[in-house]
Length: 177
Image 1 (spheres, rainbow, N blue to C red):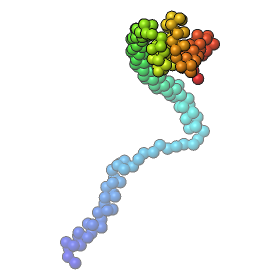
Image 2: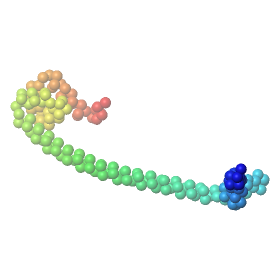
Image 3: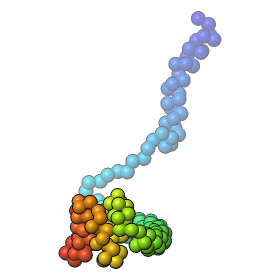
Image 4: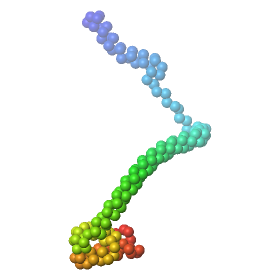
């Protein structure tokens, strides 16, 4: 063999051990320093003393984290309450306007039935929702209400009378169930 091939072969064989020597020569290059764990009585006492010394600081840190979480939750609750209050005010305004409209419409509706002939009013009220019809009949003068109920079919008049009677009964629950 020639000197060139022998030298390259020799270099290849020595490259790996040479790299290992270089790596070992660099202090701490790939080495990880691990703490030495002593299991003597003195080290156990030191560990217990260390834990005792940091217990208050750890507890304080936990309390601070919990306090921050509670403050964040309170802030979220306050925002939701503010939103609910705004919606409640909006709904109350809507309900007031609706009730005002219903009162106005109801007054006009009762006046319409007051001016109708009893037989025509009876036919109209018999076709209405029984609760609405009974509310109208209750607001009419008693003489006109009795004439209208007399002109109605018996089953419809009885139903309206039952509704009117239960509305004036103090023992009747507002909950229909």
